[in-house]
Length: 190
Image 1 (cartoon, rainbow, N blue to C red):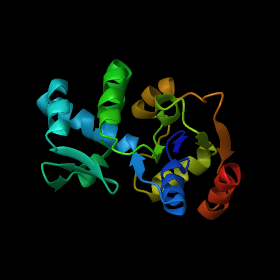
Image 2: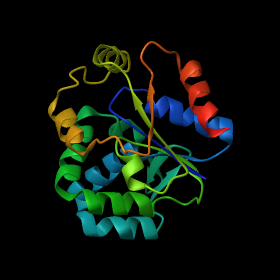
Image 3: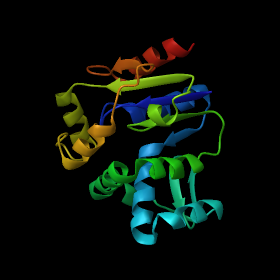
Image 4: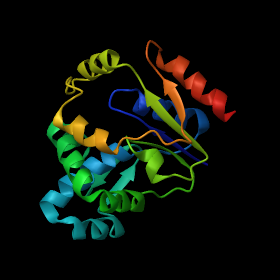
């Protein structure tokens, strides 16, 4: 079973994806993190090298960590400038970025989250679009130490690709704790 969770920044999609993966005992793939790693490595080594890194086992996604040449890459990938780099690459070369990210998936069934994950896996059994009000999203970003301007260049670039798939179930997390939202997602699945 493939379940995708898409939506804008700070809507709660990552938290809900991790919780849902644990609840359903499925692997979790953070495609936003993958896109960031791909963008950073493409800038350093060029896009053509990425498949080689994946095929040789030098770049992998394991237990919610991006591992490059044996080193946990996650801390640097959380930097705002890396997110902007990924958004810029996605706006100019989305298909290649998507293809590289998909080549990192090693399971037939999983929970995938990312701003455009439901578009990447249009045949997923369940597709959720998670949203929240702008003020709440800004507060969440602030709590996470991220860019609080949801109208930043990165958000603008991502917004151009962020579309509600007509077959996705819309879940608004505004004013809800994660446990309330996860119960709502599970009610659709079970």
